[in-house]
Amino acid sequence: MTPDHHQERAPVTVAGLGPMGQALADAFLAAGHPTTVWNRTAGRAAALRDRGATEADTIDQAFGAGTIVVICVRDYDAVRDLLDMVQLDWTGRTLVNLTSGAPDQARRLAEWAGARQISYLDGAILTPTPTIATPAARVIYSGSSDAYASARGTLSAISSQPIYLDHNPSAANSYDTALLDIFHTTVHGIVHGFALVTAEGIRGGQFAPFATGIASLLPEMVTRFAAQLDAGSHPGERSTIASSRASIRHIIDTADQHGIDTGALHAALAVIDRATAEGHGGDGLSYLATALGHND
Ligand SMILES: NC(=O)c1ccc[n+]([C@@H]2O[C@H](COP(=O)([O-])OP(=O)(O)OC[C@H]3O[C@@H](n4cnc5c(N)ncnc54)[C@H](OP(=O)(O)O)[C@@H]3O)[C@@H](O)[C@H]2O)c1
Image (cartoon, rainbow, N blue to C red):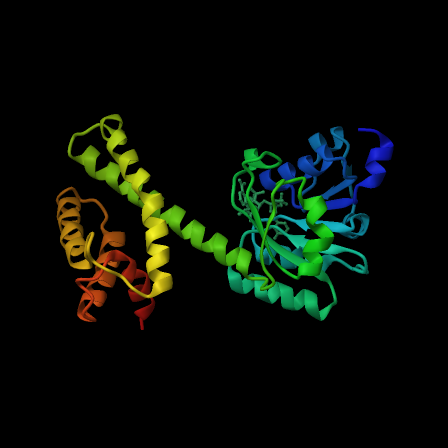
């Protein structure tokens, strides 16, 4: 990379040098952006410095060096801690927050930025650190379309196909939160299934090919449920909520025999019972997304 090449690229600041912040800073450096880094705890920037990053002594110096200022820290409380520390003229800069959080936190941060005329873009990183700057990286953005237009070229260093969802700043966190919901409840299902079979004396490796068979059914189910929810129609011709109730009951009975926790299954059963009480026992399982919202 020649010095001239560096001149063409927008200067970027990365605040937060956990595993993800390090990967982001590396990607900006690799794309030729003059990159300034800062972390609350000193000593995390040595490798980045070796690859050409500038380590700022103060957070004001760090934020002042970038026209695109990227924050990627643990949570939104940490983001606010950082922003409260900064005394900066934000004119000509765009703040891009790639910290994971809840939709409401993104809304409130966008309001905070709006009250200060700060150009603000919210984003969520959907894939792990090794994907950053590779075609596998998935990063979604929402909020001001002007902020996105300012930052898009620079952000393509971390994901060559950035996805802008909506002008509503909370959209990226809404997607991210729901995807994490699917991930974590699925992980619970996987480990629960393993707990059951191993309690029955079956080795994990014997069971795994059957478990992966379940996973391969999910993409079609997700697409079908989406269409049914959007249409407000939940036909029970493939399987019904009533039938699901019977399955969950025998899983609970088996888990109880082995002393395995049944908290998540009882939670699922409660939603099924509510849907059944509302007269939807003969509906398809996609109706349960609606029944979940009747928890009052
Ligand atoms: N790692 C991944 O693969 C991945 C994937 C998708 C999304 N994300 C998201 O990316 C964000 C960063 O994740 P990460 O993996 O880099 O590690 P992390 O452990 O979530 O965050 C570590 C960073 O947060 C900083 N931090 C924590 N509390 C702070 C505070 N009160 N004030 C200032 N800085 C604070 C840490 O600074 P110190 O060093 O001073 O403690 C460090 O820079 C998270 O929101 C995470 O959910 C990560």
